[in-house]
Amino acid sequence: MTEHATDDGGSDYDDHDGHHGPSGWRYWLYTTDHEIIGIIYLWNALFFFAVGGLAALVFRTELALSPANAILNSAGYNSLLTLHGLTMVFFVIPPLTGAFQNYLIPHWVGAEEMAYPRWNALGAWSITAGGLLLWLPLFTNALGLTGLPANGGWFQYPPLTTMLNSSGIDAEIVGLTLLLGGGSIPGGINFFVTVVNERRPDLGWFDIPMACWAIGIITPALGFYTFPWVVTALNLNFLERALEMTFYNARTGGAPLLYQWIWWTFGHPEVYILVIPGMGIAMEIIGRFSERPIFGNKWVIVSFVTLSLFSAGVWAHHMFTTGLGASRYAFMVFSMVIALTFSLYLFSALATMYKGRVHLTTPMLFSIGLLVGLVYSGMEGLQLGQPALDQKLHSTYFVVGHFHFTLFMVGVMGLLAGVYYWYPLITGRMYNSLAGKYHAVTTLGGLPLLFFLMARLGELGMMRRYATYTYMPELQFWHILTTGAAFFVASGQLVFFVNMLWSLRYGEQVDNPWEDVLSGQNMPSPEWDGFPHHAPTPENVYDDIPDDAVDVDLDDDSGTVVSDGGVGVNLGGDNDE
Image 1 (tube, rainbow, N blue to C red):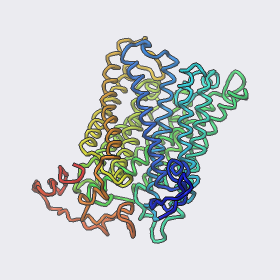
Image 2: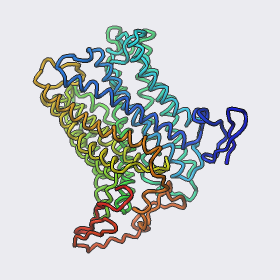
Image 3: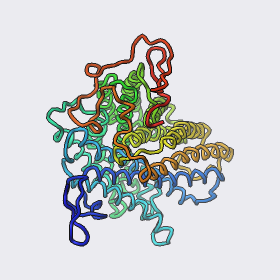
Image 4: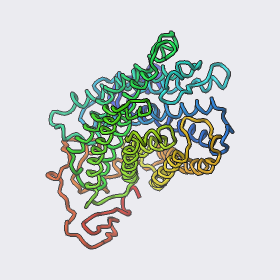
């Protein structure tokens, strides 16, 4: 137990983290405990997830009501759209990943604390400060105190953003620099060094859980390469706006395409920074709830490494409409090669579930949803990787649907699976499983419908980055359907937030809710079971599912159907039903 100072000058005791420090709100503000900082990351991510989602519902309602502006004017629409994109890309997925990085990496590698605890705390509050700074101009503008919030799109293309007289763009640049420079880059160094230097001597590289490989090694390493690019691009933009220096403005000798070259050198690898964490977490969960070691464990790691390397070589995939000439075909080939790395991952996930006893718990449902999203997103990626087709679809809503399919159906789905899997570990309480299943069903059913409709709008001629569609008023019917699908998905997210908050106070107190489900599979995981730990492989896991099982049999006690080939699908009888 550790002594903590109290407000009255005395002391209290807290046996949670073993660190000296103040109590109450000061403890949360000054703490360097990795578990508490992980929770701060989680609260940041969930708060901005709610804010960004509400913004999307507002402008989706705007599009459904009228081809012209019904609620927002064009500037207001562009501002809300920009804030939504920046929030979801920078202030939702990375902080949600950071929550697991902070809370779980020391548990996975057997370390007492992060390598640089104070850097860790700096990263958490950099997210809060950067996100609030991003949204602050929206409220000050409503009060008539400042100009418009950021309204140049989430990638902030100049010369538009260098010429717009908007304090919100300056706030956005400072906020993102604060997030990336104060949080993401030092945080990535911290996570990477902790795994490499602080892990137990008896823990081999391939004993590290798959989720730890994804979020503790691959993602930070990719961030080391990508984040300096975007910080450079944004700050050159700031210097041009604030000091009238010339980088992007063609009228004064600049090169507008320079920004795109720098931005997409960051932007395409950033997509994989956003999706690899969810992929690693989903693979970990698929192995647990299939009661089988991950098939081709080392090949999954190879797929992550090669995916990261190739992602850094296809930045001009996003610039086919800028007149690249014959060089675009090289980027087309690189884009297609990426599909091979995804194929390794998908094959491993499906092979892991094959002949396994698949428990359809809430985390498992979200993990399976990630696989569905990965297949469809990958097929669309192959289409957009073809220069001729990309030139037709590049400026349409088809790309909006594809981008959302990739980030939400892959990146966010995997992270939500992690929330449901580790929520009992973090809080000591179990959520309402029925509400969790509703969230899974509405998300898995609603998102494909929503993004298919976005793609259909693009095929019909709906342009992205447009505040109105008065040029094609017949698109309103499709916008009404799309907005309806968006509200259906939102109903599941609302249930998710209510469930998490309600369970935090009233949920059943548990130690390990998966113990009964996973008992007997001989697949310990360090965050639940401690050390010594060795990664589950066929050599050290006894598979008790008979290969010659050919009859369908329902075990009333276990609630597991064992079908032809020994494939098991859990229909009930576990703590998540």
